[in-house]
Each structure stands twice: as structure tokens, then as C-alpha cells.
Image (cartoon, rainbow, N blue to C red; front, side):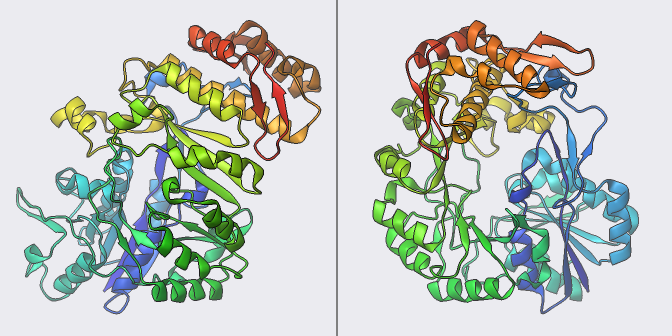
Length: 535
């Protein structure tokens, strides 16, 4: 029996190429390799992205435009990241699979996953299609009611997929209803199962199923890596399924690390939800990576409350060079309302981090239900004065959260395409699109200044910035930045008409930013170079 595990393309205004390693499919392939002929088809990574004619978001045309230029750019074009359907059809036809397992991680990209299932049925209606991932786990009915999907797996899928294949090899229907995690249908009836949680998470994913040269960060072969699964917290804005926190054995981590080295892996990104939750366990696991010459990262975020300067020193020694912290907000009221831990320890660690060799990115959310725009301004003022890089995320309605249920009820399918950051959904009435867009532009401005400071330590005052720019492209930058700094206007350049025009913006918010930033400093990201906001 031939089984094909597929990572579908996605369609959006942006994609993150270094975040597409299909680790979950690797676990599945490893689990079932002894009972079938299995392979992985990644339809997204390293595939040329294509501009799509039009997009499903006409309301965003005043914000994202292909024909404009600004040094404070955000999004412009709507893309398909991955193969087009004709190419997918050709590949699936050539592979001749009996079963196709399709990953569906995010609700807003569920259509792209269902599209793969539809293509399978067009190639050969006898192909059995199975969907799994976060979206089918939360909304099994939505996926299962598609005529192109035969089965859905809820929760962690290694054992359910194994048992499903065993049943299909003997009798397509016999015993399937008793497999935990497997949802099926017969006629118009849906048979839903509870979420499956793996009892043993020490399975070592066999990386022979993927070509390591196709997954690279900074010219290094990289892989995703898990030392634990699950999260003990229940933040109000997070819609992940309820999966308990569990740790892997150190012996299994050591063996997997050895196999990574054999596959010429040079960079590892830890995908744990709570990598540093248990400092004793993390320190023991970290010791296994020392001396291996690997570059380590944790782009999924690091739990800062358990960290100490000693642990951070160990992280650097093991190979960490960049640190990603999830700050969310610095306002305690907002944090309490979101059932989030307050990052007191991170704030205490900032002086150490600024003097350390680490490059630090600090991630926060714009537009949470209990935020006010002035909260974000205060956070920007705080972050711009530190040697770190602010990393904003626009809040979106995450399925499986109380806010999502209260807002959409049973009509959520009508809004499936809006469940993404780039949509700038005004879940909080104080964050209409002009306001959110302006805040994102302010972050772009701050990060531009940080980048310029890293390249030019002689820049000491914000008012001197326009005078440092020269050249044709820099002439556009100079005019746009001069207008922003002097007249507090967001301008763009129309590439087709050759004229400047005003962007959509919240002028009062820009004025508030400069008022609060007056006489404050902006510090570099990679250096301690700084300038004074004297405008």
C-alpha cells in the first residue's frame, strides 16, 4: 500500500520560508514506515511563489498595493506559496498513492488543504484521503463534510494513522470506528472521535524522508526538533487544542541529535511550546547539544519566567545566538485579562540581554480585546530604547477560543479567510484598520532606524536622518521619511504615476507616538548605537 503525506500550499500576503519544515509529517512517516510504502510530498517549501490575480479581500486594497513604494513597507501582493493545482495533479498522478494524508494546520488555509483532497479524487476517486492537524482537530465536521475527504484524525496522529492503515489493508470499514482519534462518515452521518494524545513521545523522526538541502536557514541545513509536547497554560488568545505538557526522555533526544549530525544538519530550531518550562530538564537537555557546532534557535518562543543568566550563558555555549521572547504586552491589566503570565523575569533580564552577545527579538500582539492603542505606543517607546528588535503580530480570531465562539458562533465558516493576521480584523473596536496599520508602520519605522544605527554609529539625532540619505532610491526615502518625521504624515510613492500620496493612517496616533518619544532614544538591534528623538 502506497501512502503519500502532503504539506499543501498556502495563499496569503506573506509566507515564512524558514518555518515550513514538515516535522509532523516526518513523525507520521516514521510511525507507519514498517506497514506501507510511505513518502512525503512538500508542496510549499522552496517552490516559486506566484502572484494571484485578485484576492478575496477587497477591503484591504486601500492598504496593500502592488504599485506603491515606501521604506516602511508592510504587505502588497497576494501570493500562492507553493505549487499550482495543475502541477499538484501531475505529481499525485505520477506517485499513484492508495492513501493521501493531508496536513491542515491553520483554519484560514483549510481551503488549500481541501483543494489537495479534491485533486486526489480527480486523479483517482479510489484514493483514500485523510486530513489531520490543528484545524481538523478543532473542526472535524468542517473537513469531514467535504466530499473529497474520507477520514479525519484529531490530535496527535501517529498511532491513529497507523491503526487506520492497518484496518484499511484488511477491511475498509472494520474496526475503524473504534480507533481513537479517527473520524469517519457513512452516508450523511459523521462519526467523530475524541482527541488522541500519544502515550509515548520518544519516537525519533526518520529524516531520510526529507532532503536536508531543501531546508536551509542562513545557508545552513536546518531541522525542527521537539524535546517536549504540549503547554500547561491556557492563554485566552491561543486556540491550540488541549494537549498536556510532556517531556521526552534524554536518551531519545541524544539519539535523535546523533542522527541529525549524521544527516549533516547544521542548525536546529526547537518547536516546543514550552521549551524552557522546566529549567532543570532544559539544562540537562541543553548539555547534549554543547560542543556539536550547531546553531540553535527557538522561533516558537521561549518561556522567560524560568530563565536565569546562568541558563542563558549555557544556551549561548550550546549554540544559541538569537533569542525569541513572547512578551505579548507590558501592561499588567491586559496580561491578566488574557490569562497570560506577566513577563516580570524578562524585564529583569533585559539589562543582561542588552550587554550579552545575543540578538534578541521580542514579540508582542497588536489589537488584543483589552488593549488600547496607547498601550501599544507605550510598549513601542519601551522597546525602541532597548537593544532588541520589536516583532509585532496583528491579533486575529483564533478558533477554539471564547472570543472566537462569542463573536462568530456557528457562522464562522463565512469568515474563514479573515482568520489571519494580514486581514487586520478589528476584533477590538479601538483597533480599526487605520489604527492597526499605523501601529505596524510605526514598528517598521523603529526597526528601520535600528538597522540604520547598526550601520552608522555617527547618527545621533533623528532630525539628522534625512540628511544621511543620498542616491536615486534614497531620494524617495528621504522625502517620505522627512514628511513622516517633520509633518507626521505617512506617504507612499506611486510607481505607476510617479507621484507621492498619503497612506491610510491614524494621524492622532502618529502625533501621540512622537509626543511620547520626544527626547527618548532609539537603540540599535545588533549594536548599542543610539540616537535621540529630537523631533
